[in-house]
Amino acid sequence: MTLLSGPPHVITVGAGLLQESLDAQAVPTTAVAWRPPLPGTADALARVLADPRLPAANERAVGRLTSARPQLVGVRRASEVLGLPDLMFLHAGPPIDWERASGPMRGALIGAMLLEEYARDVPSAEQLLASGQVRLEPCHRHATVGPMAGVVSPSMWMLEVLDTEHGGTAYCSLNEGLGKVLRYGAYGPEVLERLHWMDRVLGPVLSAAIELSGPIDLRALIAQALQMGDELHNRNRAATSLLLRELAPWVVEAAAGSAAEVLRFVNGNDHFFLNAAMAAGKVSTDAARNVPGSSMVVAMARNGTDFGVQVSGLGDRWFTGPAGVPDGLYLGAYGPADANPDIGDSTITETSGLGGFAMAASPAIVRFVGGEVADAVAATRSMYEITLAEHPAYQIPGLGFRGTPVGIDLTLVARTGVLPVVNTGIAGRVAGTGQVGAGLVKPPVEAFTSALMALADGVD
Image 1 (cartoon, one colour):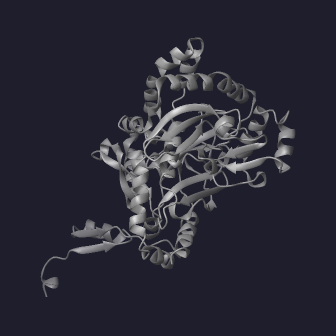
Image 2 (tube, helix red, strand yellow; image 1 turned 120 degrees about the vertical axis):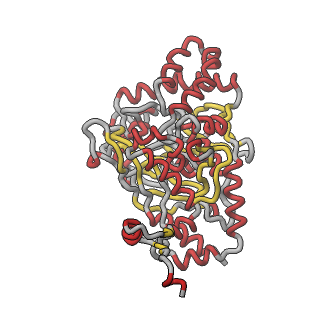
Image 3 (tube, helix red, strand yellow; image 1 turned 90 degrees about the vertical axis):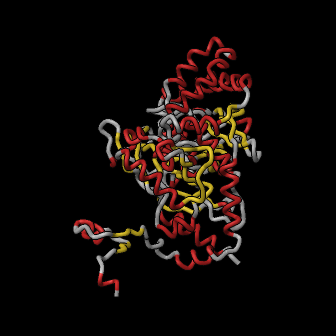
């Protein structure tokens, strides 16, 4: 009968109204953070959790991801390393065709047609793209990632990143800077002129510089940048500065005549390192692919129409849902009506434990994507609920040097209802507009639930 003879101590679960009322009356409480599982997933979740392969499979998958050692080993033309034939382009996100492509994706494809001189003007480029004669394939299918529209054409120069631990290689194009750029769907004369300069000057100079410098340890550079206030998706200022310091002497030695314009270009582009971080994320997550029975996500990507995920134990299959419109801060007079649904392969940063998952390391990121510093910390803390590990190298000073949450687990997403946090740039929905803002976006639930169902179907 002690229950009635002493002061009550209440355990609260679920809605916070009871907790708030009891707090106001100074009643001792213990809050239990519980959420219902995602609707319709109970049977599939039970089957996957009962799979005897699951614990060891996930341990192996996340262990391979966190032990990857990405190094920048070269800068080479896409025509050389990807073998792109004429009238074939790579793009961000899951597979898509011209008919379903969004405005920025169409704009980037038009720009690539003009860049490669497959068409003489915009109408003829659109006509050829609509005819079905142009082959479009996802970057991820070719060990590649591309920011925003992610369009890769033969004359573009690619960062080549090698995983010295597991032997994989991944590629990402060079970053054009901000404003009206191809990856945001712009294709005006200034865009094409910059791309021609990158082909003629930037790519060859960086290629020669890295041949002289030797491999650059991206894992160590990313770890240092996190401790300097970057989260490596929408804030890359420290990482770009560190990379510039590594490359500068070799750029001067490789091409004294062009060194100044190359260094000015990199120095004026705080996001230059993003593409290297993306390639590092890609080669790391690829090391964790194809582990039978694993429920760990190895890719999240968007094409401006669909948001897709791939899972270690499910091969190269895409599971998709509609891409959402980011909620964030807009440039100038732009607003939500001008925004395209989420686009780009840059969510490979979140998939590898960076970006939105590392926002607690980057208080200044809220000035770019919105919210308060406490929101950035809360975002990172929430991601520990749906991940399998903490990254041993990527650490957050503000959390006592705790490793970033890494290894998104489908079963944890389903059990908690917590979706991955993604911070992102926002592209204008009209082709040719360029960037209109930056913010946060929620992935579609159905991408994760459909992947879980497929994983359950494979359990014997």
